[in-house]
Image (cartoon, rainbow, N blue to C red; front, side, top):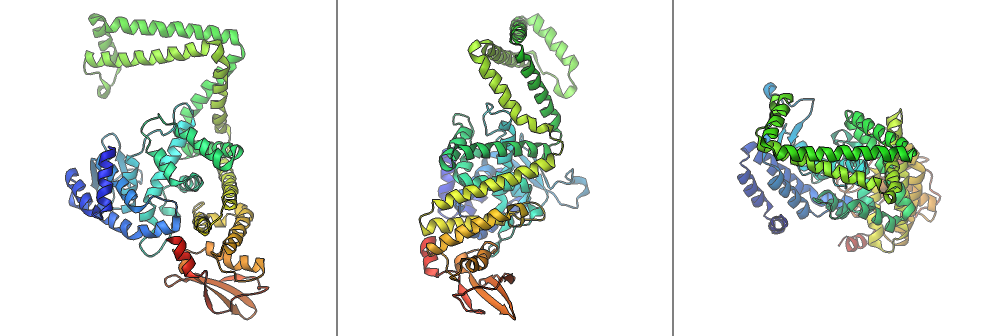
Length: 531
């Protein structure tokens, strides 16, 4: 697999990815509509990717990005069928725009390119990227990161067209998943997240590595806060987008509550577990007896098939024997767990494990889950901004502060909900203003931004507008101070984009003349840093 990916990447580096894609498509025997659609997707990505690399900074390079999608198409996708939106005989149910069958590696979709790319990205999802040891978040946090990654993969096609950058909240599959994923990407970097989502085995404990990385970069207290908040958010998002899951979660919670109550009377608990051990041991013996006796196996075969629906009938006694061996293996695991718990040394550990599991599940009891989710999102954004401040304090070069400027602008323009972007969220305004001032002061100190006034407050009121602009390359931007009667306005623009005028307080002093365009910074400095 690794060699195959290397070969694909080598061909892409040689700039002939179109030919490589066509070869893959020929092997797949996709019809001409599918081939044409996929080629169109890659042409658009080719045109747009240089802009997203500028705007976002911490992302994989274009060749790696394209090779990853090639790998999914080659290894995880057997069939893509594109159907007409007005075809009444082939409607996709539940107002969806695509359906995927992971087992058969199939996609059926309407001819919407970003949705087809999103469906392709979902095919590669591993069900869990966190070890079972981290109950219950092994499922919910895996889902949060996987969905966020799928949305992230579609971004170059969805938000960039080769000359402009925009993000329409209605086109993002889940604003909440996207926001938290982008937070994590900026906290720990895209390389770590990409390795995590592609992790096929649990030899490497990425969740433990995640905790260590956070502790090393932001200290232990902040690491614990991050993990606690995103764990709770992941559970609430799981319920929000899969409401049928709540019954299953409630059942698990009730079982843990029962076990915690039983532990309170240790002697009764030990007695019950001893009985459970006897029952499991007898089950193992029973399976052994049936498997090794043809007559008993035949009776078990008839008995089970009578109780099963037609589509779930067992085809042969050989198949039944294999099923029962798997059941025996499960009983052995259950027996090992009971023996572990009955060991006095492990009893306290078992109690702690139950309490740790219960800690995450208690959030289910909250009546207004939407309100709780909203509060946790705000908490996480405030914490994220504190982490940004930690990173700013480590800045020592022009290149570092330039990256932070771009990252901060990108962050402020992320949709927070259907109506607002991060920069519009009232509860975050105080911290956003504080961080903006620190960045601007640092950028002026390192000569990345031009000082427009000797007065710090005037400087801030004018220059903070660079964080609102969607001009791709800030180094190409100009700033103009406009005076109309007794009012002052600022406008930022380049050759393609003219931002609207924004009124500012009357400047106390100015280094630039009103109504004259001035570069935000000498382009030679930016060019050197960009290179």
